[in-house]
Structure formats: structure tokens, C-alpha cells
Amino acid sequence: MKQLNGLENFIASSPGLILIKDKNSAWQTCTTALKNMMGFSSKNPVKGILDNELNCPASELANYFVKQDRVVLESKQSIKTLHLLRVSGGHWQALLADKHYLTANAQEPEGTITYFIDVTKVSKINLGHLVFGNSKIYSKGKLNLLQQTYIIDGLSRNIHLSARQEECLFFLSCGKTIKEIAKYLSLSPRTIEYYIEQLKHRLNCHSKTELIEFTESHNFLPSIPESLLTYL
Image 1: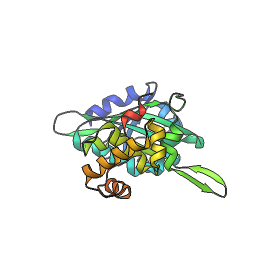
Image 2 (image 1 turned 135 degrees about the vertical axis):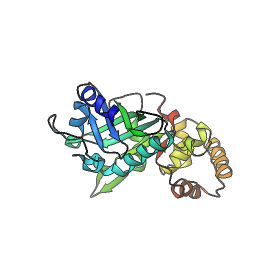
Image 3 (image 1 turned 90 degrees about the vertical axis):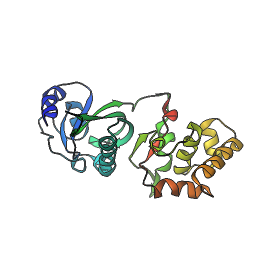
Image 4 (image 1 turned 45 degrees about the vertical axis):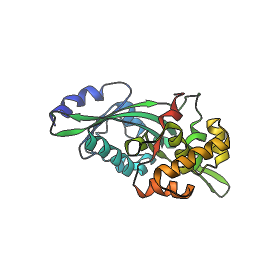
């Protein structure tokens, strides 16, 4: 743990949103801004805290955060992620993140280091329509939203798809119709149908429902195509 110990004081006093976790996904240190966002005071120690112990609703996604850590630790490769979270005070926060493999030597992993960028107020992309579209739940006439976390271009780590195919599969998994997908991508419905037929052939599926079930049955973590985030 030498490298983690050496970084702790530096990270704690740094600006921005940075997090270091060990190989078991336990928090080791983070910046004050991230600590406050997750519901802890500046004086609260975070070393040893697990994601399900965060002092805010983001803890509900702990299982996904840990799985994303495993992707990095097992592949020894960095990933990009998009998080749409309810943080301290119940506020909604949109975060882009780069998660990197952290090691002192080539053999033994020490953990991960993640750099977050707050994109909550980015005006060039409507994150609500893009991502929350599959998470609208009406309760007693009130619209509620669910938190979500995605690996950016995560599907391309498992199966080779074109950007358009991956976009269509993403929107299908969000429950969008062909007409809605066509509107999002500024394409004709016939073109969307063509891409969906390609997906069926590529993934050996016979219907749109089977395409969605394919991603679920293969235990792919939620993924969003990077091409949909180009305006960020």
C-alpha cells in the first residue's frame, strides 16, 4: 500500500473531485469537495468506507461502482464512466469520470484512482432526455427519477459494434421506440430499422426484445456510447 499512503495527503488537499480506493473497493482518500458531495464533513475520515456506506442516496448504486472497479483491476485498463446521482442534500449531480488502475509494481494491484468532472450544468446536452428516459416512474402523480451509472463505450469491450449500432441498442434498452430513436439521432425510422436488423444478425437475435435480453443475460454493465456525449 506504499503508493496509496504516499498519495493520501496530496489528494486530500487537492482541488476538484478525486477518489482513491484500494483493491477491495474500500475508500482510502478523496478530495474535500468529493467528501462533502457524498455527505461527509471535512473532518470525517473516509479511509475504509465502502460505497454502500456513503452518507447520501448515491450509496444505492454501490454494487455497480464495485463492478466498475473490478473491470479496471482485472483488465488493468482505464475506463470512462457517466454517473447521474443524488448526492448530499438530495441534489442531482451528473459526473463524468476517468477510472485508472493504480499499482506500485506490474504484479500487484493497489487499487483505483478516479478523476471526476461535474457536468451537471452543461447546456449542450440534455442529460434528462438522453439518459433518464428509461427511469421515469410516476407515483401519486409525481415524476420520480432513478439514479444511474454507465461505462462509456462499455459494450465495445465485449462485442464489436459500429457507433450507430451501439447507439440504437442503447436507446432500445432505454425503452425507446423506433420513431423516438430516429428523432434522437436525426435519422429516418427506416434507417433505424436497418441498424436494428444489423444488430439482430450480429447478435443472433430475432426481435428487439431479444436484443435487450441479450445485454442482460450476458451480465454487461450498463453502458452508454461515447458518440452520444460528443457535445460534452
